[in-house]
Image (spheres, rainbow over the protein chains, first blue to last red):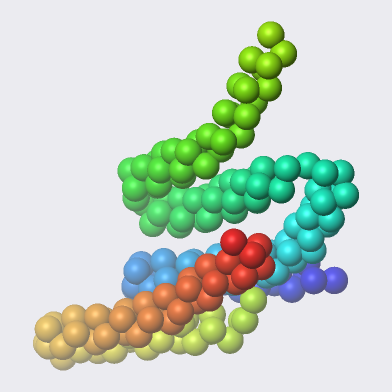
Length: 127
Length: 64
């Protein structure tokens, strides 16, 4: 199955990185970035069918379309922020990693403001 | 998941490491520094094209 390819790719990348880490740590960081980007490309191309299914379900069940778009954006932002955060902390820059995580959280909250507004409107309507 | 790009970058890294060792042993530290920098810039260009293709794929796959 494909999972063997992915695991083999990760192991080969780790071995290469260990080889290069002593002489050139910055080259090892480049290798980690390329390996991480390769695996993410593989995963995201797989995720498109999942989101097509979500679109069909949303259009059938009549959920508000832009809420679904916000949900997709939030999950994407979470993945990308985690991708950058782990690479920065791998390189030893935990300060940058935590700041990146904070920025990601702020962006996610600002993105989900419309949902919070509509929730509040619905609740105030009930009262 | 192109493994050959991984091997290409590992090859460049090993080559630069060996070259800089040879140059430092030959007493030319500045040239060793230059080769390290050029190797790093070449690899950085490869990495940047990979990252831009990742973000482009993300944008097209999710129609954002």
